[in-house]
Each structure stands twice: as C-alpha cells, then as structure tokens.
Length: 340
View 1 (cartoon, rainbow, N blue to C red):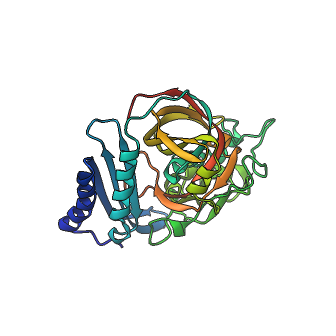
View 2: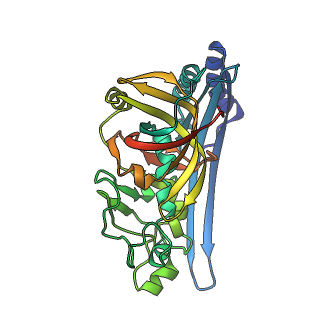
View 3: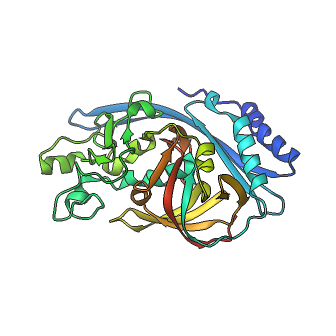
C-alpha cells in the first residue's frame, strides 16, 4: 500500500522541477497526487467483494515567459518512491526550450510519431468501444456487416495486441467489476484479430455466454490497466527513418465524432515538432486532428517498448496504461490551432 509522502517530501520533488526551470528562464507548474483507499461491494444475497489500491502521479507543464514554448512530462507509479522527478524535470524543460517560436505548416496527412502518452490518449479509446451489447445490436465499430460481431476478424495491423491484466493495475487484490466478480486477464485484440468483447453479466445471460470479468461495460475500471504490447524500435530510430513527418508529445480536448468508426477529434499540445530528412528540425504550431485508432493502427510502421504512462485527460492518480511510442502513416491533421 501507498505510504503517503510528507509535505516536505512533496516540496522537495517539486523543487527539482522549479529549480531546473528557473535556471533555464522558464516557468514551471504542476501537481503531485497520491491516492490510497479500499472499496467493498455486498448485498443481501451473500455477495461480498473487497479490494484496496494505491497510486501516485506527478505532472509538470513548463512554459517560456513569452508564452510560445510549452513542455510537459509525467511520472506515474503505485507509490511515491516510484516517481522520478529529475527525469520529469529534464523532459519538461527540454520540450519547453525546443518548442519556442513554433512555425505553421499546412494541415494534412503526415507520417507521425506518437510518444507513449499520445499513443495512450487515443488507443485507450478502443477499450470503451468493445462492449458486446453495442456490437451485437449494431451500434458499434465491432458490429459485423450483415449481423453479429467482429470476434475472430482482423481489424488492425498484426503487430497490435491489446490486453488488460489485473497484475498491471494498482490494485492489491486484483480488483472486481460492477457485479462483484474478480477481474481476470483478458486479451482483446491479438495479432490484429479481435479475440474478446466485453460481456457484462446481464448481456452474457441474454446471449448464453460467460461474463468477461474485465471491469464492466467498455472495460470501466479495468481500462486503467490496458496494455498495448510493444516492439523494439525507439523514437530516435523512428525519426532517423522519417523523410518528413510530425512528432507529437500528447493530445488533449479529445471528443467523439463517430462511434461506428471510433473517430475522435482533439488537439496536440506541449511540444509538436517537424521531422525532415531524419531529424527533428523545428517546433510547429499545434494541430487539430480527426482520427480513429483503428485507422492509424492499420498504418503502423514501428513500435517501441511498452511503458507505464498516465493517459487520462485529467491526469489524476490511477489513470495508468501501458503503451509504446509508435510510428504511423497518413495521420490526419485537419486544421491549425493557435493554442500553445
């Protein structure tokens, strides 16, 4: 369980960020959130489920005084000792320095390298779409044309495997779902092929199958432990192999457009860069994107190792997923944004 840090310990971690920012004539903000607790579920029929969990996250946004540069980094773990304030500070400060005075380039489709947080921002949206009932009733991307669902069908590149595993969550006991059932490891997509959809107890009974035990409809709580299996590439090598493209730190203000294709829109932020002839050459203004993780996971070129990151939009403790950096073709940036 989490041993809550003292105020002086939190201040010491924050000071590492603020001092480095000050030395570089930058302005730092951020927060440290620690969370520990337990939950139980019981009813008059004898059901009883109990679990406890702990999680901690530290995030910082560093900006230039003129407001043109913005860098961000996050460190996430199950205890305060898991945090790495020094690496966080160095990353956020460097991105703030490198992103000053961005230039505008034309929106369009670009070869794009997504850092792990950016990958997680969008790939985790697949989780919310994998409800069996929506698929069976014809309301989902996972509905098969002509009826039924897409279990057994290939939907993304064969290098893509998505799973949830209670061992990846901050839970001490593995967790339970909304029905009080213990969570189990579930492989959702394996080598590009849909292996499972999420059946809650009600829909499982209606369809005559076993419930999935993944955390409720659309994964719910289990989504925090979503893992995309990675590869062996690294961002430096991805950049070297890119003639012209875009490097993205992360996305925000992500909103749905079309549930049938898992199409979303949102904005880049905190460091977006142009790649030319195998090098990161300059910062560029932020883009609005219109993309589906299904689309770009069919245009996959390279994957890095899967790492723990916090990809929730509010960045609160407990939002961890495990994602790789990826390189994809034809990522759609639909317009420019003046936001930093």
